[in-house]
Image (spheres, rainbow, N blue to C red):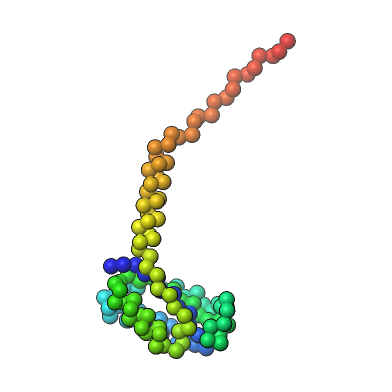
Length: 130
C-alpha cells in the first residue's frame, strides 16, 4: 500500500453540510477500493491566488490516504465529473517519507560518531607581571 495526499478545492457556493457529505462520499469510495483514509484536514475557505472558473475563493481539503493506483484513479475520475470541485492534485508521499527517514538516520549516525563537546577547562590564573 502506498501513501498519497489528495488536495482539492471545492467551490465556495457549497454549504458546510454539502462539503461534509462530499468528503464522506470520498471516504466511502476509498474504503470501497480497499484503501484507508488516514487523515482528513479541512482548511476551510481560503482565497485563491487567481480566478478559477470565475471563483476567487474556495474550500481547501487535504486527504491523506493509503491505497493503490486504483483508488487514486477513481478519486480523480470523480473530481473531474463533479461540478463543485474546481481543482485537485494527488501526490504520492511514501517515497518522500522513506527518503527523509533515510537522511534522518544518516544524520543521527554521523552525530553519534562525532565526539561530544569538550569539557570546558578553566584557564590557569596568570602570574602577576612585575
